[in-house]
Image 1 (cartoon, rainbow, N blue to C red):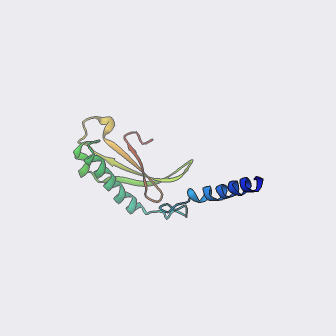
Image 2: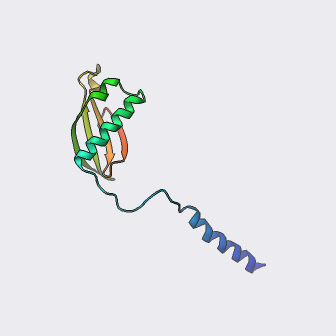
Image 3: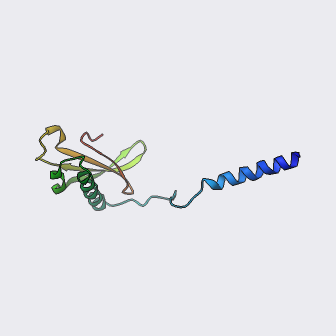
Length: 113
């Protein structure tokens, strides 16, 4: 009986590891994007945010001011800045879009933090 229990526990332990390994994700090295690619991706993100109604439609016409690579504790990110003089609230005239170094959308806000 003891051998059966040990065999079942071993079989279970070996099968659990493969249950968490699946397709659809990659843990390999990230291919960094260029400054132009970061700007282009950020324009698309702003368009989606406008489409969702989270920011005013006037943002859809705004082009990026600056795309710069920043170093943070967790690694490098792209910070793409947009300025919209048509925005009524002066505190919300600058929109910051954060992308990973590989171009994945991370966040957007009016604070830059």
